[in-house]
Structure formats: structure tokens, C-alpha cells
Length: 509
Image 1 (tube, one colour):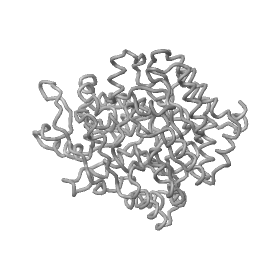
Image 2: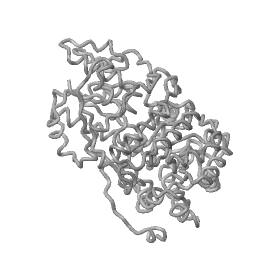
Image 3: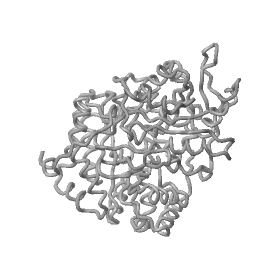
């Protein structure tokens, strides 16, 4: 039994420029499958069409050359622009099934685990859906399929069609892996590591994931779709993480064997554990690593950890992303965000004093939003003053509480998932049309960076050279956001190509 991890052609978020990374789900699953100690070794291989420049016309031939029995598709949603990559996965599975009907397709990661029954009912080219964490489920599936009469019902965390009847079967819940340190080092050796690039200019670049779950249970979060929906958030809220020492070991491997310069940790909530942060920083310093890094964290935890900001910067942390989302404590409580407005402001100010830049994400398009509410939200973000203000158009992520609410309201007006990337309006609000939301988000995105001094601070206010690279890439793609929000232009369908322009022309455009 040979399992092929397939990444189909795709692009990136409109503002990211040329941006593609090794799939962190694939690297971890592949490493686990080939380890004998977890129940037997499975032969694995990988095909990354993005990094290798493989187009749709060639994908079947390239898969045929790899000669797999089972093809796995599934991605970490953060790195790929919302759920807008899902049509690419469906297209790839359909091509593989039509061209190689003997090959089985299995899908996991995010989105599909939240709707496994619907996925199998609507898409004949999908053979299996992994519900929740995939390591043990995928390995047991691969080993079971080698048998003359496989017993799929005994594999926890799996959805499939019963042979003969076509009935969709969901097996028992798969228990979570509580100790992530047992997992092997990701199988980066299967991937063309020298090809990966972030924000047009940073190469080699990676986006590892070192923890799972998030204790906050924000009502809008995409993470709901990663876990077994039958657990109603219990699995999602069970935050588990690899130790700081193990994370430093991965950075050591990435830097010394693959020349990686920047790692952006795309954990849902990287800084939950203060001691893990301290251990990671001390281990990086002890190993004398020079790789610089970023992560996504919670404002409340940043405020808790202000005293270790100098240690974080010394260890290579040069930028963080934190969710601002809205402009009042009442709205934050409604979202189950677990922070306050003062947490946001204090975190941004403290990080800036320690040479760590900030990306603050915020949203428009909640059900009660009108134009005044959005402009009030913008005013708060402007006051909080993150270095990058990333405004996203709200969409109700599959499996989240908002998904059920918005479905009942009939507010979802764009069913085409190609537009579900938080840059295109897909829902109306109680007071605003999708056109209104597109206009307001494009305005907010442009207005924020029109304030004197912001671009200068990004280019020259921090010591890390990677801040200047990220800023340059953003400036070269600044119009792309407006084109997505107001003109419906798509960026996730294709691999992006660089179209450099001068910084000066973009500043004055």
C-alpha cells in the first residue's frame, strides 16, 4: 500500500503575493505513516503541484508516475486562504478518480471533517473522509486496505460508503493524541524545500503547526471544522502542544538541513503556555539558531508575557498576529474571544517597544453590522495601531456556531466556495448588501495605510530585514485586495506570479 500526499495547483491570498509552503498536514502525516513503531510502516510519497509548477493538465500523469494506491488531500486552512481552496481539492480528486479509477481518494485536514456525510453523498470521487486527527486513522486505513476483506468499521474516525448499499458509515470517534511529542519530526525530505517562498521575497520559508486545538472556542473560528462535530467543541478546546524543546529541534532541522530563514507558526493559538514559550526561546538561543519566526497568539497571553518580550526578540521572534476582531468588550464577549479591548492596545504597544511588529486582524460583516458600526470598528483599529491591519470579510465557517446561525437566517448568498477566502463578501448583513461590504472593506484597507508614517514604520521601524520584505510584497499587491472585495477577482485558483512595482509608485497611487 502506497499513500501519496497530493497538493493540487492553487494560489494564495490576494495580499500575500507569491506565497506557497510545504503542507504541514502532509509533512506530519507522512512522517507518522512511515514509522514502524506506530503499528507498521506504510510507503509514502508526496506531490506538490504548486512548488513543482505542475498544472491541471498534467496532474493525472504525474500521479500515475507515482503509482499510489491511496491519495490523501487535505490542508491547514490558515495557509491557504480560508476555505476557498476546497474547490481545488475537489477538482483534483475528480481528475484522479476519472483518470485512475483504481486509486482511492481520502480527504481530511479541515472543512471536510465537519461535513463527512454530505461530502460522501455529494462527491462520488471521494472514497474516505478522516474525521478529526488523522495520524492513526490514516495509517489503520492504509494497512486495512491491504487485506483481502478489510474491516473498515473497526477504524475510529472514518467515514466511508458501505460496499453494496452505498450507505454512508461514520465510525466511532477517534480519541485525541494527548502527547504530541510522540509524533516524529515532519517528513520535510519528501518535499522540494528549496522552492518554498513566503510573501514573494522570503525563501526558503515554512509554516509549521506545533499545537492543536484552542481553549477559547471563538464562535467564528475555522478550527471548528478540524474536529469531530459530534464532540460539540470538546475536542477543539483540548489544547495540546509539542514541547518548546521539540519545536526548537524542528527549527534546527529546518535551518541547518534546508536553509530555512523564516518560520511562521500557524498554530491556532501558539502562546497559550507561558513556560513553553520560555523553553522554546531558551532552546533556540542555546542552539545558536538564526532563523526568525512569527506566530498567531492571543492578546491576553501577550499581556501576561510582556516581561519575556525581550527574550522572544532575542530568540528571533520578529512579528506576531493577534485578533482584534471588533471594537467593544461586549462584542468580544459575544464572539467568545476571551480578551478585552485594553488587552489589544497594551499588547500592541508592548510588542512594538521590543522590536516585534504586529498584524491585527479584524472583521466586517457580522449580522448586526451597518456602515456606522464598521466605521466605528475601523476607528478603534486605527487607534490601536497595529503595523498591519488585516481586515477580513466575515464568512460563517463550516461547523462553527455561526455556520448554523447564518444558515437559518438565510444570509449566505454566495454558495461558490472559491469566494470564501475572507476577501470576498459571501453573506449580507441585516443592514448591508454584499456590495456594501465589499466597498467598505476596500475603503478600510486603503484608508488604514494612508495614514502618514505607517508605511515608513513598516519599512524602517524594525530591525528585522523580513519586515521590509513582507512590506514590499504587500505594497506590490495592495490593489489585489480591493479587486477581490469589489470586483470579485479570484486568487486562490492559480499559483501567483510576481508582478513587481516600485514602492514609491504604490505609496502615491
